[in-house]
Image 1 (cartoon, helix red, strand yellow):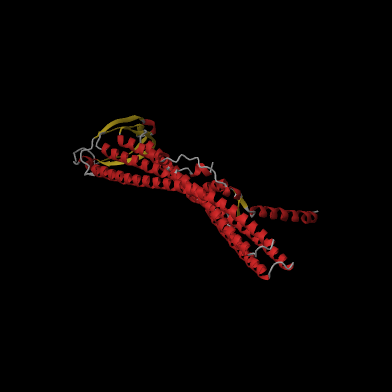
Image 2 (cartoon, rainbow, N blue to C red):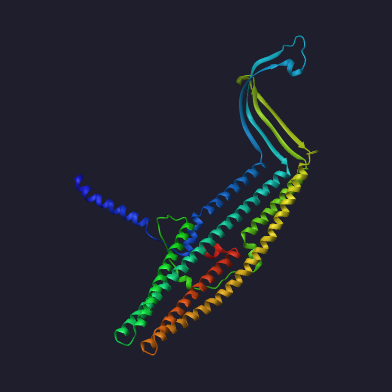
Length: 440
């Protein structure tokens, strides 16, 4: 019975294991949206940025706790022996030198609460702005991650288009070679025509090899960005979208870019934090009022304990701090000036990026229109040259020349489409809309 199960079950287990292994190593097909989503999920920089946001939230909670009352429970038993002469600094006849040993039992609550301390409030407000700054920095990391993935994916689409175009030209070269050989066989064509067509065919085959290598290299780079298992290959699932030229619906005003760019939001938040730090330093000159005390059950033995308590209100007025407050204010003012310079430089850079991206999008759109017309004319030229060659009106030099023109037109079209899609991504990045455009 066991032997029969082994004979039947072992092949089944091996088949299941092989099926599972085949699933793990199957090519991973990704659309552009899938690639962006995977990058935002697995990119280490994005994960670290999320952790920093969580850490800033805990810093805010710590700052808030300083504003709230604090209370601790206490329970103790102490044995004391005191030197009376050492405590009062004198010795008196009849008074013993020491007291004790005696035990003290006590248990209860100790508490304190700030009633008026503007510095603690300023620090709490600063911690809230710190959370917003971290969120803006996280958004910056996400935008940059999306930008890298989109650019690499576009490179893969361009490489795939190059492969398709190269294969199409190789098929055309094969047809021209077959046509030349057939005409030579029938005594209409010449050997030089066949040889010329064969040279062109080999050139096109070599271009196919180069295009495939470039595609594989681009896919390896995409897998590296996505942190995919190196044993698993990638495939792009929407090659056709590369040839689309969708309209850009982004509001391309500088005000929208200033409002959306997370880097600028982070700098503005840091400016507000620096201003709070300056006010915090100034508020250190103000009085601070606090309330503290304890309530205990206290006695020499557990049986003799009675309630004992102390309530205390305190007022602290800074008189002389050795220049610490002035130094804190000067340091905060310098930080504000530095951040204002960063803000101005960042605004100038954003304006340049937006204007450059808009100009590149317009130019690339015109390039695509011209390139599409060029490839249409090149295909017509190839068809007409082949007809003339088939009719014996001309040799296949015209066909080879038309093939070269078609190759150039293909390169122009693919390059124009790539530049348009990349310019579209650059504009979305300049407007702070990468994730909104490509991940949703």
